Image 1 (tube, rainbow, N blue to C red):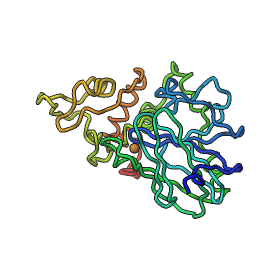
Image 2: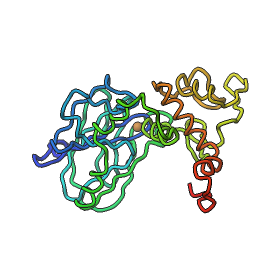
Image 3: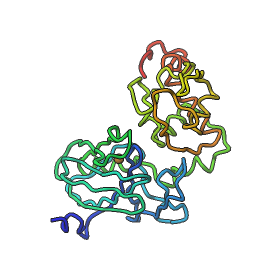
Length: 285
Ligand SMILES: [Cu+2]
């Protein structure tokens, strides 16, 4: 039984699933049908999956950093599973299949989706305080729909373009900060709608006075956020564990994330700023 689970048929295509605290990402090979090499030493804020930039097979790989995976009906797929940090377990209950993801190695299994629909992805291995929130979705659809979805996903080469233009001014820091926050999993722990999470919500955060774990008070301003992003566990807000991963962002990236935190902190103010004539759009976002 287990033998069948991991003995992949020759005609199976490949998809990679990457688990990390606490999010899912995915990768499909491009036209060359080959996934480029990856290694933890290549992981950075702009290359979160750690693809080898010198491997020509990486360039056309499709990179999906949102937790929604699409698959075509009736095509056998080999799932290649890897973890960036601790043990996770890729589990879609309706697939009746799951597999541990072990740091330092690539595990696999295969299946053929036979039912159209949207199914939850869960992590089935207790992987830390954000484990419960490590959720995603698989959308099984017909070939044409899947093809259209995949065509819209960026290639690795495309995701690397902004990095080479790092000295150019960023036209919309809020939008850039939003992307960075999604890609790096910030919003997995910090809600933007006030819902309680592993870390403080970003709604109403900017300008607020926090009580820190040593009972001192701290005003949440640019300086506070910079420390909180780059050296998160130096000081933590009372009631929260000191568990935020270490991130390396450059000054421009930190400024963009702070701009995004400000924007989501008081959404009303921001939408008025962005769209001064937009009385009709009030509350649209
Ligand atoms: Cu997990």
